[in-house]
Length: 318
Image (cartoon, rainbow, N blue to C red; front, top):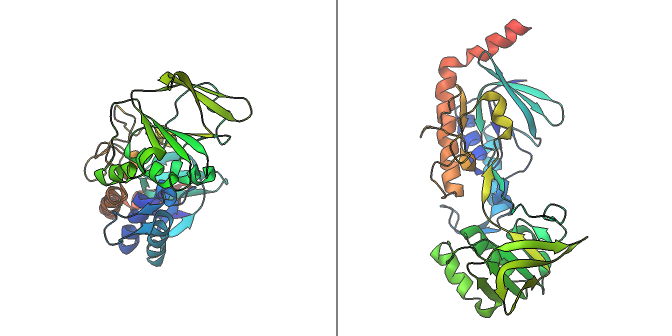
């Protein structure tokens, strides 16, 4: 089927873009294999304007309902291939279905960065995890270790502290990089949370299930830290693999390069959300939603001038 616009990704950026595109009366399809992105599993959110306190999944559900009400279509699927011929974008889905569009907005977000240590991949979901907020509650009454000192780590630890007996934060640097309000909440847990500064994980130990980590320097006289679960929160990498066939320009960190109006170097292709590094390390739902709205507006302006290129191509091909 041919659309005026296809949006890849159903997080805050993609849903916001869909809402605006629908209001512009563009025939729009949103494709996303992971509804809501990381926001849907982020737990409580209390810094999104207009919502005093809301669960991340609920926030994404409200945005989806708004977007659906303006006529946007949804597919729970994964894009496996992209191509562009004569001003017409073509997508192939994991299900085998294909669709075309005059414009495209990429909101593919990021994926968790790994430590790259032996046994890490084999023990993933067997004691090694990448989302404290998602899996931390599974360790009620147990001891866990969290690698990373950023705001996501601190927020996850604050949530997990409601369940875990003890949490060790393994931080490579000399301080935590968290919002003051989240840092204050961390301090309120007292001795339940212990931060091991200037420390790294050198080895992950376990055969069928995670057993312990080996630290770069001793803790209480030993480099072995025995805990029930290991959570790795050391940042993220942009999901751009699917864009390679289109020759989309990336920055030095691998993020999609686009101007403030979300134009990429490929005519008719726009980007929004965490797949870009427009605001540096500051990645929030509100910034993603803002970029989505701008991307949809730019796509609409492009479509008004060049929208017939795709239809002409398809008609000729037939």
